[in-house]
Length: 232
Ligand code: HPA
Picture 1 (cartoon, helix red, strand yellow):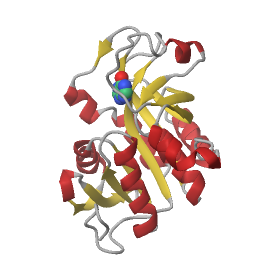
Picture 2 (cartoon, protein in one colour):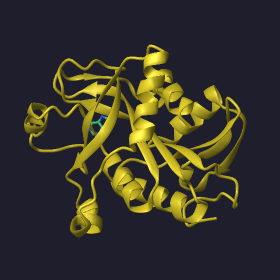
Picture 3 (cartoon, rainbow, N blue to C red):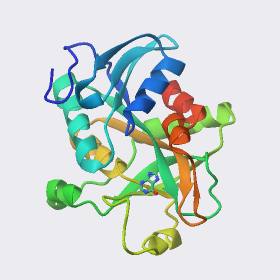
């Protein structure tokens, strides 16, 4: 057991899918895994281990935002020896042509996070995806004809903000979307030799002001979940 995860030693697989929404962790498990069991209910942050195509995998909710994500990623690495983490989440697109449901794979993430700066500033860690996982995901997408966009995202500490145009500069710099977790996942991955990749489904487009329902967000896209599970 760790401070926030109730699993016994050995109950968590070496590869873990993480999701901000713990109900998405439950949904993926019910839809895609066999022989699954729940190893964590602490704080309602569900965690499950099961099997996908003969491979053992866990799925863990992390809550929203960098501080919460950092707690779970830290404990997965340090207390449970996890070697590979694939985030499956949602993002707000900041390129007008990106439609709801589009899958985005983050090869790197910018951030405005103070937490990130506190931890890593002087170490200047790059928040980039694991190259091997990224190329595996691109290959699976090609083989299974899943439409993906690969590029930079932005991990923010603030969902609501006074400045309605705050993403303009990032849109102009080609950033695909905004979420609240990945820069910390990637920074912790570089620091601890963890393989990490973020795969997202566009749940809203901040530029065109289109939004998915909370149920659609919970269930996101099955294609994203399959993509993540195929590279476990
Ligand atoms: N902002 C930040 N995080 C998000 C958003 C957003 O618009 N949509 C999904 N995750």
